[in-house]
Length: 174
Image 1 (cartoon, rainbow, N blue to C red):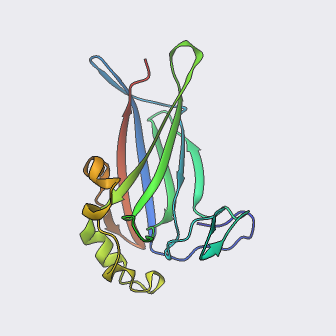
Image 2 (tube, rainbow, N blue to C red; image 1 turned 180 degrees about the vertical axis):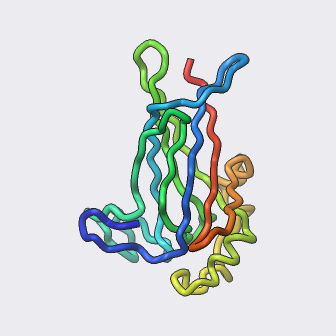
């Protein structure tokens, strides 16, 4: 949430997002330690860091971007905020996972996770989201979501101070 270049914290409803990364193969599904997981997202107003856009210029800023390496259980946990949205896209967080693959190669997988509409409606009542919920792009109207986004859908649970969600990813690396 905090931009390491300015120290400014982006406002929004707190979200603890855990990725559970596994290596899958014939007859196996094991936790994958040592995988690098990156996430990046827009803030509550739909603004990304390090981007030039007609409405903003955040080049050089690094808010709401981060990475961690999975632990022995294949797990990483990010402390971020519930993302905002921008025209034409449903509410989402981007992620990329890099892991050692056979033959000395590195495999990477890039995708997005989405949010259920009921939770988003509740979250967007908060002042930081400026009433964005009334005219936002819904999942079913997002062209990328329509190509399998229902398999990438989070249903965050309310917890003290915000929400938490988990997403399990299985990678076939062999």
